[in-house]
Amino acid sequence: MTPRWLTPAGLHTAAAELPVESRLPSFDGATGWLHSSPLTPGELRGKVVLVNFWTYTCINWLRQLPYVRAWAEKYRGQGLVVLGVHTPEFPFEHDADNVRRAVKDMRIDYPVATDNGYEVWQAFDNHFWPALYFADAQGRIRHHTFGEGEYQQSEMVIQQLLADAGSDPGTDLVSPQAGGIEAAADWDSLRTPETYTGYQRTGRFASPGGMRPGTQQVYETPGRLPLNQWALSGAWTVGEQATDSDEPGAGIAFRFQARDVHVVLGTRAADTPVRYQVLLDGQPPGPAHGVDVDAQGNGIIAEPRLYQVVRQPGRVTEHTVEITFLDPGAQVFAFTFG
View 1 (cartoon, rainbow, N blue to C red):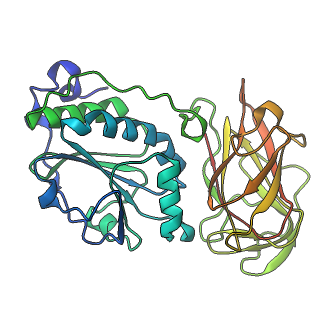
View 2 (view 1 turned 60 degrees about the vertical axis):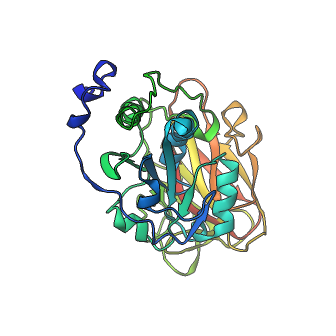
């Protein structure tokens, strides 16, 4: 149920019902800035500030991004400052060039603080990707949300804080047309959770004999994979955060139920692309191919990021996705679904 103070009719008359949660913390711990010189709470006083914690391979943030971009564009002239804080999850997300490329590719034009040391994250006592913190023109945090969703309520909070600061933001809400990786998940059919492949956080591994972390091992895929389990074939080394392919033809298989399959992929040697091929139930994906493969299932790892390998049209049921890496040196970090 929408809280009373967020309904459009009462949006600009019930500001007192937005609690004061804390003061806007310092961004002094940021390790770099994009699209801006370093910003301070004092410099932001008089502006409504939306702080968005993200990391560029997070599918939940990627699906939130169309709304954050739209708010930044719509309300910039009304006094809103959107400030992204990129706090990395995987090692390659610490690399400034990778973050800079992601910011460009994702059409982010608002200020971004890079937070490689997690100091800004800790200053906010944050624990989630994505997270949104809403600060008023007096530098007080008045609202927050964690994860995807609540977009209408979030925009109403922005409108309320802008109105409190003397602007006239209106009551119309954005409706971005998101596609590709940014499209909203098909929550009604989604039955498979995010799964990491590194030994630090993995589970549901089904290759016979189990996993042998930290050493090269030849694995086999069982004849049948139960739903939400995964397996390796060929020579692999399972590391703390990623699983590395050690020979041409090494494969990974996952039994899933979801419209979309995404995989966070990289390469062991920088600037050395790795080719891969995707099969769905043993066949090329055809019209079910994701944006990062063709209808025959062919793709290439050109930089470390999230790759969409399957997007099913029509009714969603259980399937097995198999990815064969035609060159050695692929790194598989995680599977995510939508």
